[in-house]
Image (cartoon, rainbow, N blue to C red):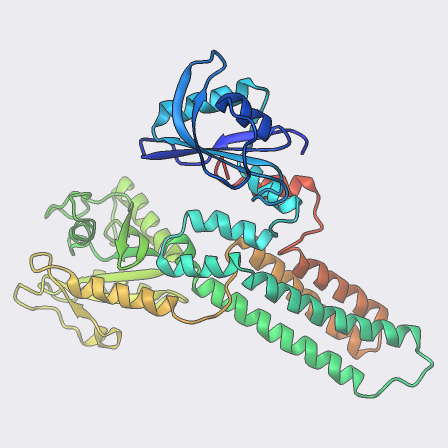
Length: 446
């Protein structure tokens, strides 16, 4: 980490302000060179002109110097806040690069912050996810992680495991001494409590993952039931073709839309029915795949047509899904009702109409997403974190067997594996290559 690095830290495009960040031992020298200022005061906003290597004026900008170790990366850092747009920021970046500074790799600023002890991996991942947060609830969860909520859980779990490990080591080292009879009970009690806590955290994380990633909502139904009309209504523009011809939608259509404070991924699927058309059959297969991946299913039925075999197929699908929220809506409620809804009553169906609007449905979606966001449960925000916690739980479960047989050496081995797994969430033992892979998923300039 001896190189000085730089990158544009704001998104490319036209904006009022762009930020160029520099980090490393040569940051102050670069700032002095392109601003032609000496004695730059740390943590002070300097309004200054910036010049390129040919001594030509680039822009008038705000320049802030953060002296090490009091910066995000723990190194000397300089930020230039210039007028937005692609040209000005790029010219400042080119000037910095011409002075011998290297372009930063994606996530390299955050990686340096981690390696310099300014943040741990839980905070780093929270920063990365906060940039792409799909809901207000997600932003709140991630803000807690940046404040150390998950780090505290990791430390508490690690301490509980180390206490049990210490008891085991004492019994191994002093096997011939009198050990209190209640030590075994105490160890099991601690491990049972930790296992229960881990299971709660993992369950809550799976259940609420849509808050971070964006809930995936699939609209299913037989052909001509109004799925594309619903999609267009929710998007407020004509995204899907609407016609009376069955099988018009041949493929899944996925778009993002905001419902309340949540950004969701809305999927319009091909009408599910028996078909001999090769292309339509592929679309139906993709529809079934979308059903499996969805967090929420909107099952749409046509209230103006009698219940038939195709409706029965949709009903069987929603009856078989697990861990998926189902909302049943009866469309075309403005027409004469011919659908027998007796089989749908247990789903508390909503009556909607493309002509009158889908307000009842959007309200139901908003209420559902808000209810999932309620609560103060700790949440894991990445697959890496979930896998680490589950490895720790499995190691604890494996440790209980040799403990019951009095094989304390094997018990200690499994417990050490649990400590390594839980610790990897915040401060892993993995090598530099693993860190490169993780931080490489960050956006450039972060």
